[in-house]
Length: 396
Image (cartoon, rainbow, N blue to C red; front, side, top):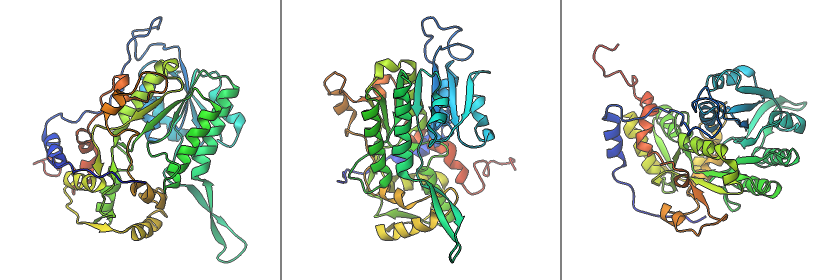
């Protein structure tokens, strides 16, 4: 894959300092309220009846929780697929009015349980995804009497499960399906995650041609796996290794903006049937710039150095042994390639001919992308030595 080169953004750190020092500069996440719909019971928003039922797969994930906040604030009824303990999703209940949630236990390998989640939903949203392959240790009969078994591979998660949900929607004649793919989806990518994302996206379109495909770039926000990874590396390794110097580019988008995009589609799904919607931030950055940005906010000032691809892979093999790893080998392949939207600028999107083949963006849905420096300080300041309020006189 070709790497696009461009001049570095020299004022990113300066803007970060301005936003971090400005009072009330960083907005807290608040769900967006759509306008009151024709015939809707109530004033619009909470304590209203949107008259739409949405089945959500992947509700407990990073993006899924934000989507649930949006749906709950706008009077939707949600059917939430849950394959774990019911207590791990209890925080989602407060996003909805009483009686607007239905939690259903299911297994992605059990088609009947998938159908039970969907039930009579008007819209199905599939956000199932994992940046690492889940697994567990198992006992064997030969030395060393223990091995490792993969529960869900990248192919299982991104292709097989996506096909199962799409086929269930087709068979049950569900009105609309929203499938969350990725801007990095590419059949020629070094990353298996990116390759299977592409294959899953194609499979969904083949089974359910009028599915709406959401293709975000890397997500940033509280609990992200982008900026938090650099902060964790600086905290635990006391240094920040950069893959081949961190020259590759990414154009991260705020998770709240992607959630609002999905809300807009759920609010009028027929309007976006069969369309592709690209979600991306206003500016692209190199990974080196992002590492410097995080280093500046956390004030740890850890040394950064270039680490060649083979050694970065070796580091990832060790770190991926954690229960929730901060780095895995396939993520190294993702970072080794540009993670950018389909077109390089918003102007190219705007220049497209009108029609069903036009690729839409968040701008077409009336959503302005939030710059990364307006949000990052809110959750990265926790990595400062002593915490955010350590320097406040009399606080401790």
